[in-house]
Picture 1: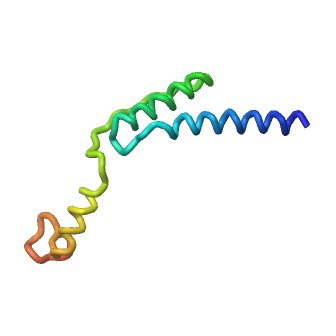
Picture 2: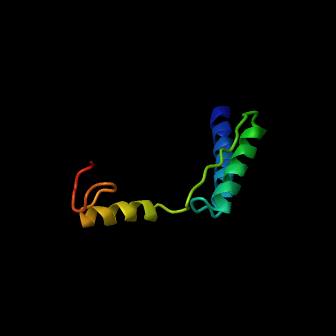
Picture 3: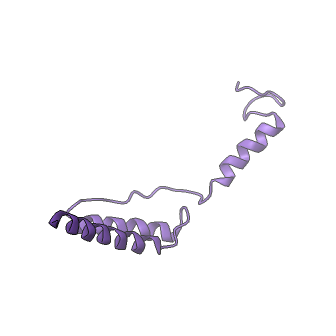
Length: 89
């Protein structure tokens, strides 16, 4: 039954890591998201895995890209096309 005991220990270890990570408030493109990424890199480093964070520009929400496309679609316009055209040029 050593395997079952090791499995329970591993599950407890994994659960504690997950609970630690979930305490970080991390909305998209926030300081919390970066903190969570750094936390993950640190935990991977503890196991000998090399990881890095790639920083990209972001606006922090998906509503603007969706809203702009939706608004243009409702008006029947496609960017760069003549007014009222509903298909790409």
